[in-house]
Length: 135
View 1 (cartoon, helix red, strand yellow):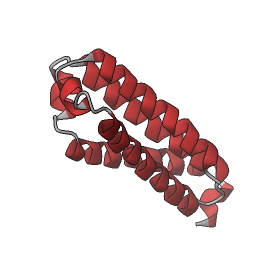
View 2 (cartoon, one colour):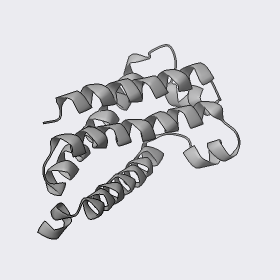
View 3 (cartoon, one colour):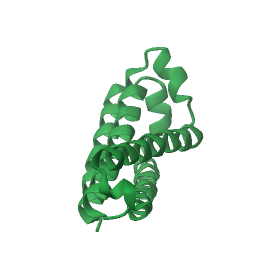
View 4 (tube, rainbow, N blue to C red):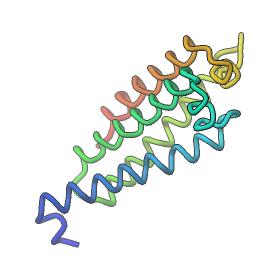
């Protein structure tokens, strides 16, 4: 395993693969927890879903960016990145819980771009807070 750490190209490729796998896994999890089918809605042109999904992708990538930057092993990077993803998922549930006047998932599925935009910025903003706390 040391040969990966000694070669910047291999290390970059390893982190790249970890980030891609993490994004795919987290998008599958988000697909399960949302009430709508993300990729069906995006294919149909639902901009609100695209914004919310894009925010999640950015958020996950940003958490892993901080995790890569602040950890010296691939294992620590994966653990901290995974923990950051759990916190992003928690933020999603808190957002849904705190909006008592409407259901976030329903509004996004209906194409409410205002809710999609807020969802995007929550994912991005929270990812910076999570990332700043990663050690």
